[in-house]
Image (cartoon, rainbow, N blue to C red; front, side):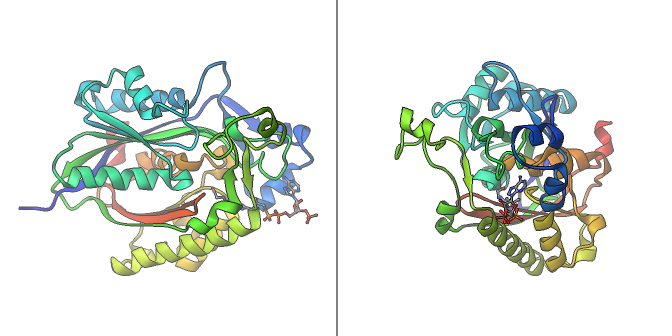
Length: 335
Ligand code: UT7
């Protein structure tokens, strides 16, 4: 019997309308457009405004577009996995809320917390269900309302993040396309350098935790930077080596979008030229788990069936990984 692969058959994304520019940030904290552009490479980011709107809102907007373009109906979906660090509520799962809003009734649904590595982790989960033959149409969502946990009085973190969502429809195929290989790793020693201190079971919300700004992203940037470069480069090199890939074979290298300097350093170590490195951090900043599907969505119209892609990610935990994909369709089919 031919091996079953998990392949993306459609991809969509949603970025909220509000554009938060460096200029506006520099009126909130002591920073400049020049510092943010040279140190990080971000010009602007999107922010979800509106009372009562959370991560599921972003995800549903992306799913509506995906259903429309692929002609998929909610009752066909048999599994929904949502990667997020900013769930609508501590419980139930945002994936369940999404099912409720989208009328998805024949699926089971759960969230994945793997920080910025959420999309690759969720996709790897989906691929295992699909390769088993038990599931046929899976939604892999990565959605983040990062603005809900950013301290806009802290210049070290406020310029870095944005809101957004991406969603992939993942299905089985016996063709030689789809997910070819994945490496996922966790280095639990990363906790002190990137976390949100309160709001979980260790420090539930109190007046004191709020006063101390413990419900926001805390990051020791330089330590995270060094680990991100080393770990992303290691796993990207490893996946290329064990699949006999050289830089020339790749259509695109698609890295997590946290810092342009990290992206450049990783690509340099891999020997991949700038023209093959997907970068959109300037427009959307770091949307955590959502960066990679948003990149895929932007690239989709140019992608060809069989294009070889290496994806690479790094985030809190630390969690990191790489994935080798052979793209499954000519992107212009949805034009
Ligand atoms: O997606 C999850 C994974 N996250 C990442 O991969 C992020 C990794 N880290 C980074 O991208 C970078 O470390 C940052 C962008 C967070 C910071 O850049 P950096 O070059 O590492 O700066 P730094 O933290 O070493 O700070 C350098 C200087 C400091 O001033 P002094 O001590 O040299 O006087 C900071 O206070 O820059 C200062 N600084 C700022 N200045 C203007 C920090 N933030 C700002 C700011 N505007 N927004």
